[in-house]
Image 1: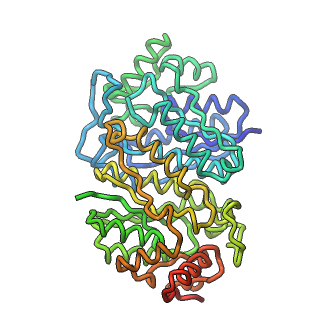
Image 2 (image 1 turned 180 degrees about the horizontal axis):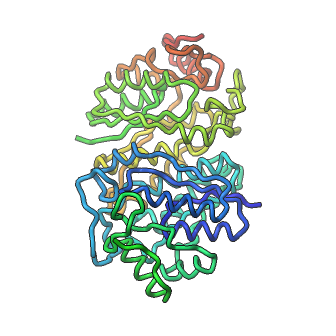
Image 3 (image 1 turned 45 degrees about the vertical axis):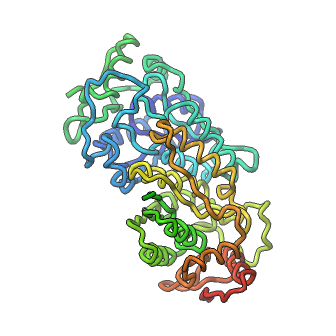
Length: 231
Length: 231
């Protein structure tokens, strides 16, 4: 049985990636992070989905120290000087303030460490570079560069059997991701994509950040009901 | 003034890199990690050296969760099933059990996040691929691949001014590193390189692990007194 570390934030994309990995009869090790994001309600979604899709193990790593070091440079992390932009015209040529320095590099590095230690064959990440926020660390050339790092920098790579970096959503539109997830039984009511949710416990989506806009348009284009609870 | 994040473990190599960075009139942000290593006495050395060389800031990040996830796959981390090999014939074609999965990838990723957030121009790492333990994530091709990741995956990279990855010891022999450090005023009594130190507080070097062997030979070849306290 193939073993895979799956990065799982609890958002729409990563939960779909989880469903795809699980559908392939993989043994899933799910991995998430607390890094100072404006809400940890997404991690509750991650816990629900990891259990629902039968992950063998689910680890949530505390990187809040990292969050504090980068807080001044991003609007996605709480405690910094910036607000999350709302109702922005989408333009992927501009890297928005919600970009978090080196976030996916750190997440992938951590996934790689666990994958090699657990003798997993794959590491999955739900990045998407079509309907996305323009972050450079979501793009295919970045993923290719990371795969090269895996090949050169690990025991597994040197031995000629590098851990595969799998990004199954990379070339899908948001509505295609949703359709695929629904086919695999994802209940998107238990996912949280919003960058700036409202409320403390059971967070409501703001409906106006980049992520909410992309998600809302995705459900509309997919022609299915949007189960998101907006505030 | 150039600003640089310097990875600082408290060992001979990283302290020499710190001295070199400081000698170049850089403003240094020093970065170390607790990841389950068999001793944290090296971090006391790091604190002493960061202060001595005038680092503007020194952060020590707790990655002990990562240490627990990889403990079964390395002898360098406490709590795993393996012992640190002693009096081993050095053979860099073999990756020894002290290899820690993805360690430098994680350290560099974290340094990158801080560097970009703090608007630093450089990130320094004291890797060496001549007198070293054969770890793949110390080799020049790995460092080149990481620099490519920086170019592709960060805002700074996309803007055409990527953070430089500086590995000044990469092509030096251990005795050359020591000579360079002594010229810059490093007191190697306050560095700890041993993989498996003896004693609890003021740890003594075992004298027999790969790192102790390389260090001892380095002082001998440099023709200077070895200030290491062996147990």
